[in-house]
Length: 442
Ligand code: ZN
Image (spheres, rainbow, N blue to C red):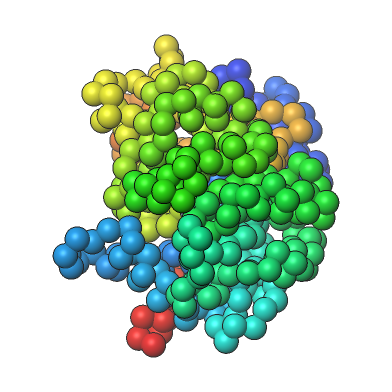
């Protein structure tokens, strides 16, 4: 058993002083008691669940920023396909080690990996690519929820294109075979989007996957990310995407809808009533020019929300939370959108923790009995925290700081980042540098 002691701990009821956290062999919080030191850190908050990542896309960060006519999501997607075609399982491992190390150091302690780079470069089928991601997560120390992605079409009613070849399982049975091979890694399920999976097949596929993996698995889907996608969906199905989804399958609290950038008001009301989670990826939605999640009523009404680093162009849990709030400020022309009477960051952090736990289907994101002992620790003397008492540090961090201000990070009670540094970071960075340069040359 491990015991960690903090001067301040953020619990579901707010700040608690001088706490000792007892952690069992499985990394779960067994007890929270009075502590008397020695202290393992000044201020500890639950690690943020990252509810949406495509880890290989980390290698595209900073590329494709020059203007060529009307650059859009769709031209970026072509560049992403060109990269994806070249990454082998070893490359993927190195890219994922770098990205997962950065996630941990910036405050994410768990990640839902929306994995669709399935087949080998030569087209061979098997679990090797997914296993490279699993191994990278294990070696980094981040808690992983692997979401193998079903991807069948190249657009509404269209056959997949050459750029999508590595993602596609045309036959459901081939995809089920992959899930069977990955079963030991406790995967959930993702449908890529309604562009890539025909709505009328969702329900039957989900039933088959639940037979294999259980009824409680998390189920994710990209939805209503781009205006053109909404228009195409209306043309193909007669419904806008969220409507088409709700019509096609029983959406409940196991479901996470990623982006939902262009919904209708009644669609968001229905999502909230069904208890599903919306995963907002503010930095990527800005990076790709998707738009702003119109969340005023959804968020004010208590809708479940989580954040994701998605394209991993910039990996920072603190910035994702800041821009979840700032996006709403910009669209509402008002402040304190996700704040309560005590401040912004506690409610924001707790909300992303609870929503993230629901999205990952794991007991994470909260410092409570039975939850995983995943903590982010802050220490004084970071410039963003200067002049504040510890109870205000989190507001100061979210508004004025970044993930770089985080000191230590624990996953399951084990320290995986110490004073901002993760183990073997220089070695991984060197390998990552070489892999990306090789991929961009070839
Ligand atoms: Zn995505």
